[in-house]
Image (cartoon, rainbow, N blue to C red; front, side, top):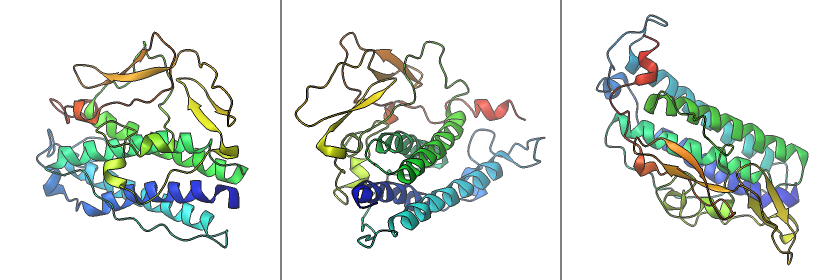
Length: 265
């Protein structure tokens, strides 16, 4: 555990960002009634669309809290554990649509962050927790993304789920995988094991020893946004370390209507 302490503190800080974001936005059916089809009742659960969204967002907040608890419990096994103290800022919430987009943006960023953090821990139990949280956030991001686009997956995709190093996550920007604007300087990025460098490609990643030359990872690429705002994967002509993400600003919040949800009514 001591060797994993800085990575666990980083993980706690980003997980707590999500939990506190959810807590900062009071959700109720009135808030979501203005969504497209917000007052339409589904035959599946006899709930209005707005009531369904509220129920799920409350569930996501609870899951975020459980993630914080899991990291706190794991961290407290070390005598040196101190709960990181962070003052977060949050993306603005101007309406119900922006709240869903913001939640997607953070969930998707945390999915990639926890995938990346698996390369920064050394104990199997820590790696298990990173994998579990990455899966958790990936599921949440896919669910939230379904509200924004009915066909989020592409047959021409050339990379797996984006993964981010801690240094990448601390960058300031408006792309998925950049949370520096909201985390500030509350927590430093942990060092990779053995003072190495983690290099992430579109299919694999590797730990490069200190002083060694990073090998080429074939097929690395960036995520670019399409006109419709759906992230699409495009391979770079010259192999390079993955540093990009789907631009949050490119999304058209809930464009047109709840296309996916409409199929369930």
